[in-house]
Image (cartoon, rainbow, N blue to C red; front, side):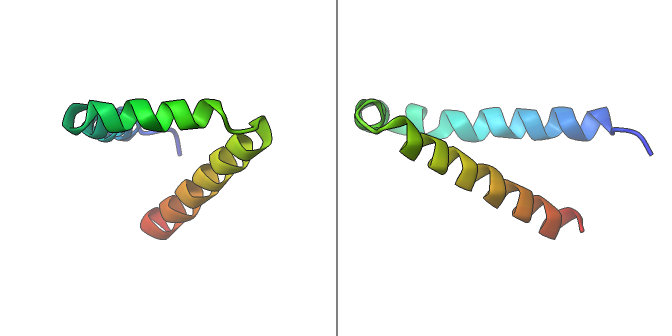
Length: 65
């Protein structure tokens, strides 16, 4: 069983679409969010990243079984 490259490319394309929604709809909100992120300690940002990765893995597991 190999990697389905079409599924991987589709997932990446969807990621790009979703990442672009907020900057397209509200650039000032994105600027404020990034400005606030700069002031956060590295540990907090790492925890947020870890939480996001774990949530993605759980969601992927639930969807793909």
